[in-house]
Image 1 (cartoon, one colour):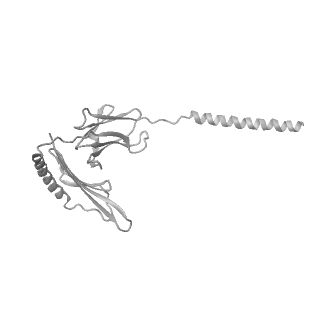
Image 2 (tube, helix red, strand yellow):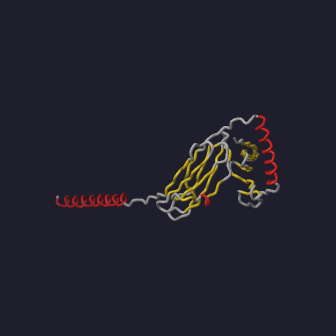
Length: 235
């Protein structure tokens, strides 16, 4: 059995002039096999620690006064050491209690309106799961394309569960079928969502019939007016 330990720090920052409250999140988490440290502001990720490349990954664009990350990676490493130590202590103190498990729910959608031949992004949103992580795989027409996809860090929900995004850039072609498959210890079988390129071309039929009907109606009015005038002249 695996235990997980998550440290979540919320900081409320109030702007005196505008009276607007902002929320900063610093999340440090570890399991026996995984680890993560990230910073976020108002739900948008600011930075996360890449423990493979041993560096911070900044998620916000450069501004005139850019955000500096000096010392953040070293802080992430030290927090992971603390997390691992606390995880071992908790496992011994609580005698390996059963871990709460919440299975994920997933959905698949596009980032922008679909136009054939125009590059777009498919998004697979996985939410409501505990503990992290989840495994996400992609297929295109039953062929594995997971290597072309990107997986975000996992983010906390207000109920204590987590959510995560996977992105796949693609160029829609008519008839193509994509699938996103999610695996998690809370699922008895993998959860698969499919999405098919189905762009309907607007039919010209209704427009043609409306145009013909309007023309016929106007012609009928004109004809009736002509005979009405002739009839009055005869009288």
